[in-house]
Structure formats: C-alpha cells, structure tokens
Length: 154
Image 1 (cartoon, rainbow, N blue to C red):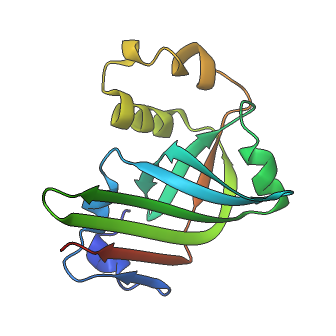
Image 2 (image 1 turned 90 degrees about the vertical axis):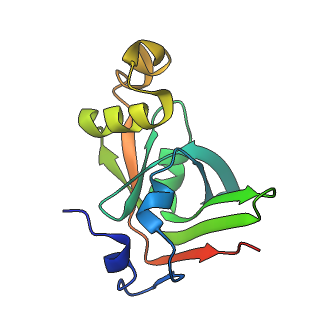
C-alpha cells in the first residue's frame, strides 16, 4: 500500500516543506539525476524513474555499468527538480541511500514505459524487443534514508 505525502513527512530522515506535494511532484515524467561512486570517483547520470512504495525505481542492464557500480558501492544520491523562471517556481527533491538491484518486473516496466513514452506501446520500439527482452535488465530501487523536498519558489 502506497502512503501519501502527508505520511511520508513522518518518515525518519525525511524533510518535506509544508504544502509540498511529494507524490504529485514525483508522479510527473521528470528526469532524475543519480550520482554513484565509481573506481575513478563520482559519476552522475540522468534517468527515467518511477516513484512507487515511497521508493525510486529505474532500469539498468548489460548496456550500462550502473549494475556493476552498485554491486561495488550501493551508495547513491538522487535529485529531481524543476525550474520555471516565468512563474518563479523552483521545486526539488533530493534523496540519499543505498540502491539495490531487483529482478525485472514486467508490470512495473509497463508503468515506467507509459509514464515516459505514453500508453501506445507501438511507440516503445527501443524498449520492446530490446531493453524489456534483455535477460540482463533489472530494476534498481532506492528506498531513501534521507529525503528532502523543497519549494524554493520566489
């Protein structure tokens, strides 16, 4: 059962500004940027994510070094933000914790696909017969131990 943003404000280590709609903000098809620790230092990568069960979920597989990086060091930091200069709206969610690899879940992958590519799966060419059928495809889940949701609007 998914908890609401109001319940999320009670999670230890989470700070959510008053009137910040965490679930509503993270339900948008925005791009997250995830920082990892590699052998040569930190790295940042953009990715598409789902926010479900108060956790961030994204795909990885053989096409990416992400799985290997997380097996060596699962610590990650993540940011999702928007900046609308015309309206003066600046919103951000930052999170930290240890990410873990999970088996591929076709139903979750379809929700992820609909979110970014729309409901017509005919437009998902790169992912059907590719990412979704690749036996190395897995989900990464970040259950944040620290999360900060801020409204920095002016």
